[in-house]
Length: 427
Ligand code: ASP
Ligand code: MG
Image 1 (tube, rainbow, N blue to C red):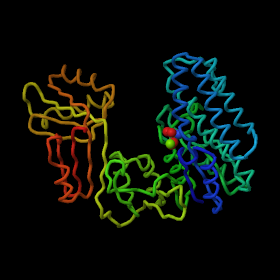
Image 2: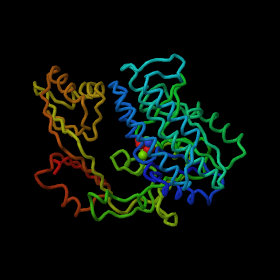
Image 3: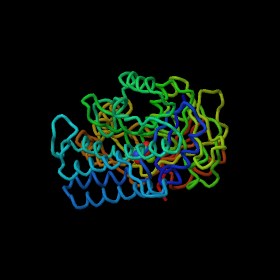
Image 4: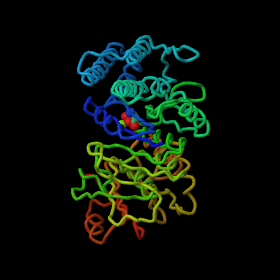
């Protein structure tokens, strides 16, 4: 069994779906994970906001537009008027759910309540993947690729947490295996991004979480490989929009891929690698537009990357923290500061300290001001510098050091033998 994953951009229109068909038609024994089509998840987030605000007019309009968008794809695929009943049923469910704010699918029918915002977010946003997979499964079945549509809510069990749930592999494995083993089909189409909590409510795995779904399926089904089909030629050593001399990397180690994903390289969802690495399943990142190209393979290997990798994380904040009484930060106050930041869900991407000063490069979030207030109350002077960027260069060369590490826009510079990290003011 192989696992293929197609992201929203690759199935944004009928041409994309036809292309998917041509990619999967060569294979026998395939589990295909698909995201919502195009920008559907963003549109569903707007629908959710409409429900939050009680704006039924806007909600209804957004749903109508989304329905129209999907109907157009269906008609383009069949080149004639065509309806897929299951798709219509999904949109009707979504309409009912959002118009009276009552969820019929849960044990206790309830109206929207702000305490349950995250639960409602998942209920609404999950329709994107349900609809995209119904369309694709129908089209493949009618064009000769017999497949089974899988409702991943029935077999991907997550923790009891909405909007950003982790998958419970042990609970999910027997369910997914049973569905696949008891089927007479050789191709399966399932949704990325969604699952269900132990209490039966639908959950989502965090934005861009379909890669993670595919890795979970690959892990459970002991797949021989997983491929992510993307609108790039594979993994590059830098974002070509920012660094014009970006180059293609043919092979990466799991470890490098995890580091890259965490430093902000948008190749794959950071949670994807771990399940694959645990079972030694290679991950291919392949160009959707040309299946003859090899792309990049990520696996356990000795191969170290021999070109530098540049990753830029934008919209960062630099916090400078100093005890007002001049006590030594490192010895006495480290644990206290980090405990407080953890409480406000603030994650540090870079930590730099001197005797009495601690500098942290953190994601911009609403909680920073609250954390600063708490730190001040605990006797620290805190300064916040906005509009920063964190540049990480793995495998840096003297030229790159020269080019990026000097200049008055550089606030913090940290290097090990292999990695250079710079916090600089955004241009
Ligand atoms: N459709 C979801 C999103 O746009 C999940 C994904 O694409 O991986 O975030
Ligand atoms: Mg996506």
